[in-house]
Length: 84
Image 1 (cartoon, rainbow, N blue to C red):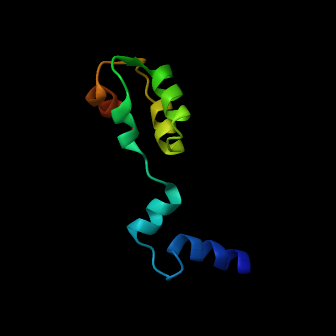
Image 2: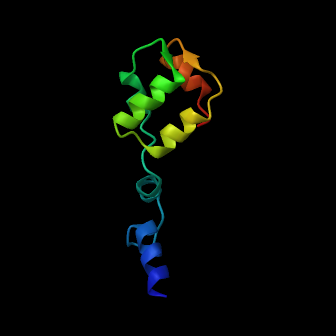
């Protein structure tokens, strides 16, 4: 029972209410700003290597991994392909 209470408190921030900041804290920031530091054109492998080296969020890395395209000409090209 204490384990369930602990999970609930972690999820709600201890106040018994779930709001967007609590959810963001649990799932992490997607870190889309991390994409702004990339130099284009760039390959998918280079994007993933850079994101991992910079400690970007796992959610952003997983989203890039799902993109079928292998080369991106600019930031808008990459962002348009992300499944998020």
